Amino acid sequence: TDVNELDTEDIRIFAYGQSIQVNLGLKDQANIAVYTLLGQEVASVKSTGMTQIPVYNTGYYVVKVSSKSGVTTKKVFIK
Image: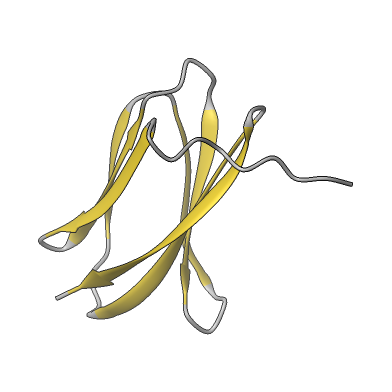
């Protein structure tokens, strides 16, 4: 039941304006999910490259990226 941690050098997750940018340096397809700090899922997409996910409310969000290679999460702030 081990969960592999993705190499975060390959993945860039950051806030830009009213959106969350996820740049995957992966060859695999990845599932990207965005959650509020209360655990409510606000977005979910599949991607293989650069993805822009619009977020309309100010606050902190947790971005989870899952692929065959593993899982990584990052907290971002939307102004």
